[in-house]
Amino acid sequence: MEERMKPKKVLFLLSLILMLLMAKHYFRSSQVTELQLSNWFQPRKRPDVLTLTPWLAPVLWEGTFSRQALERHYRGQNLTVGLAVFASGSSAEANLEQFLRSATMYFMPGQQVIFYVILDSYTMPLDVPLGPLQSLQVLMIAGEDKWWPDLDLLFLQTLKEHLVDHIKGEVDFLFAMTSNLVFQGEFGLETLGTSVAQLHPWWYFQKPQHLPYVRNPSSEAYIPFGQGDFYYGSTIVGGMPWQVLDLVEECLRGMIQDQNKRLNSSYEKCLNKYFFLHKPAKLLSPEYGWDLTLNLPPQHHERLGDGGRPCPAWTLSPWPRQPALWVLCVLHVMDQR
Image (cartoon, rainbow, N blue to C red; front, top):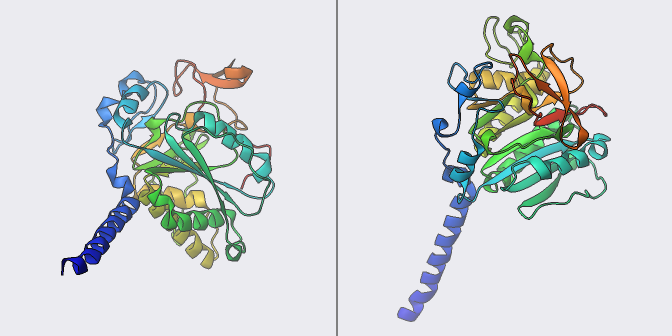
């Protein structure tokens, strides 16, 4: 009798182990605890800029946060952060390697990182040296999806499929960025949050009534006149995987429905509608992604950054009074996706 029970016990134990592994896979993000805002965020150090939104989300500027406090908090949590990037056509070779090389240096140093590179066509093997805590996955777009006419739709659909399939179980936080960026400073633990949006570097300076929201009531991206908080850029978005998945699904739905109505609704417009309805938990200032082709405000002067690179620094409101390197700069040497 006891001998007959042994196989059942083994089968039960194997089933229990499998269930625990599945739970770890599907609920990874719930294991991460965020540090209380007051323990790392110091908005009073920057009275010259907006540091808190009306819904009390932090706006990150140089000098407003303590990376040391965040490093102490996340130490021992076995944190893994993902970075998804889409490269299409000629930009895959022109920008992607430069993006990845700078990311290996400045994106989440000291943390476990997985780079997800989404490609629509085969390119030469990436010659990017990875650190001991970094890994890279190349995700090819399925052949049946390549007919999609909009590259943003193509990227979002592919990202959604891989989020559902495996990414949500591999990382605690995920960022999605465009390949025409280059890191010039640390993009660290201060950027982690449930949902993270970036203030658009150009529209941040414009009056609210001039923000380019969709004002057509027939559009899924519609925001009524007199409403709207900020205008967010689409080059950087992030958060916990389940939150990024929700954003991706909503943007896909809105873009597809608008296309069916013969309305032109871009990813960025749908992204702004999403954050209008679902306020982001954390905002990145324009320091986290400046576009070098834009005219700089009159408060600007330049100095040399690390390696002799010219980087903008600011002395008057609304910018940092102390010179600071940009975290990211946008490249325009090739067509953007």
